[in-house]
Length: 292
View 1 (cartoon, rainbow, N blue to C red):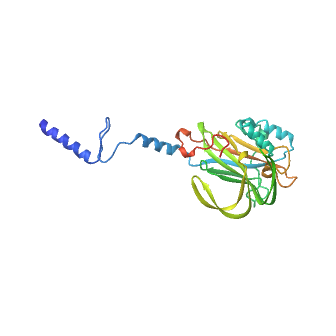
View 2: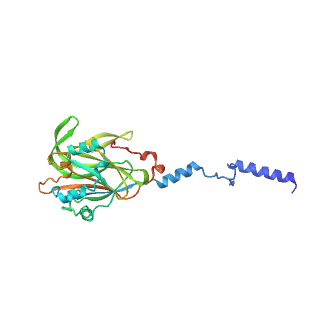
């Protein structure tokens, strides 16, 4: 084949490939009808494969005697209450609550008493022996009921403007829980006490820039008592009642209605490490502190 014939053949092959939608890149093998993978698309696919679809979080209530000095001392000596903001700790204390995180090993006798317990009444799923594993979508709200079916609930709230009381009928005490993947494998959880009360009604609720029609009871949430904690896999967020007894948020949430029944601890524990936020979707971002 002479040089002119070779040049014409090469030109013809190039024209055919360009007509088929190919483009030549340095060091890239041309294949008719197929383009080389884009680096941004590859990174996006990698992020999608690494972002967790759900975050497994264990939630359980454990009954205990708040007047048992040995257990209380052994437990709270290993709970880091300083991990929470000082202002939040004061608000929690004023409203009958205390909280902190555990990231190390607990003494064997304390750890044993924090294990899940059998429910007093198996027919009541939201009993004090509650032990559930929630699979939370990042930033999405989940409800954990503490006490349901309270005909008349008297509640005293200590806030910046002083003490105010309210009576709620047909009430349910609960906490709302959200979680986000955080840096270096931690999970950020945000917990807010809440009371649902009154007759079931329909209302429009704004969420994520949209309104939806929701059927349910009226809600009284205590945002100023919201607790945010960064927890490693296996770490614990511990919430308990303060020493004083009364009609406080802590009493309503974690003290059994019967005077002789004692109180409960609320334990929240991530069960898996999260994705590094370097690979997390931007809509997974949550509050850096106590904001919802």
